[in-house]
Image (cartoon, rainbow, N blue to C red; front, side, top):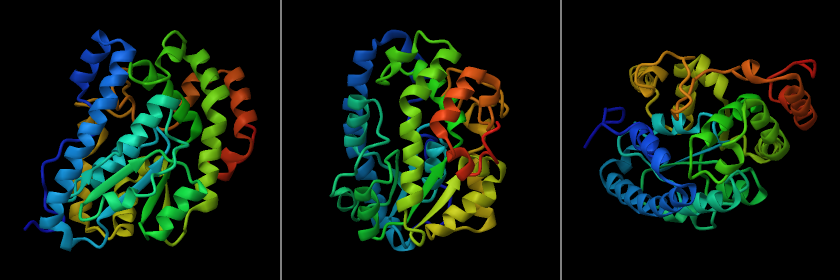
Length: 315
C-alpha cells in the first residue's frame, strides 16, 4: 500500500484531450460531430474514471479523511489546474458527471447547473476529485452541507475570464458557443461575452459568497494561486486533510508548473491553440478597449471591488 504523498504517474489534465489530438480534431471535425463525440466520450470516460476511483479506494481509502474532494469554479479560472494537482495524491481520480457535460452542450454552459440529488451517493467507496462549474444555488449549497463534503470555491478576475473564454471557445469546435465566436475579433468577442455571460458569472460569484458554508469550505483566488502556488495549494491540501508537508507540496507544484504543462513555454508566452494559453493574471489590460471597459463596468458594478480586484470603479 502506498504512503500518502508517494508519487504515482497520472496524466496531467486527464479530463482534457491531448493537445495534438485536440488540434487534429479541430481541423477535421465539424462542430456538430465534435459535440456529439464529446457527449458520448464524457459518459464512457465517467464510467472508466469511477471504476478506477473505486479500485483505488480499496488500496488507499483508509489513508484519507475525505474520499470526495469538491471544487467549484467558473470556466477558465484555474479549476483544471487545481483538480490535476489534487489528483496527484495516490488513489484520487478526477471524475466528471456526464449530466454536467450534456447540460453544457445543450445550454451553452454548466455555471447554472444543479447537482443531481444522488451525486455524492455515486461516489461512495471511491476516491474522487470532482471539479465542476456549478453555481452556489440553494440546492447545491444545501446538498454539500447535508453530506458534509469539504469544498473549495475558486474565483478569478472576470475580465481575465472573458479573455481566456474568448480564445478557448474559438479553438474548441464542440463548445456550444463556437459558432457565436468563431467570426469575431477580440474586441467584438469581449463585447459579446459582456452582453451574454458576464451578468451570469457575476451572479455565480455572489451566489457562492452568499451561501457557502465557511466551516466546510474555503475561498481561493486564481491570482493568489499564481502568486504563491505552494502556499495556497498547501492551504487547500490542509483543508481536505491531505498530506501538506513541504516536500509533498513542492513536488506536486513542480510537476504542475506552467512550463511543464505547456511543453516548455515560459509563463506569459501565449499559445492561442493551447488549453494552457498564457498562465498569467491581468491579461485583460492588453485586450480591453474603452467600450469593453464601459460595458464591463456596467455589468460588474461593485463585484470587482467586493472580491478585491479593484479599489473603486475608476479602472
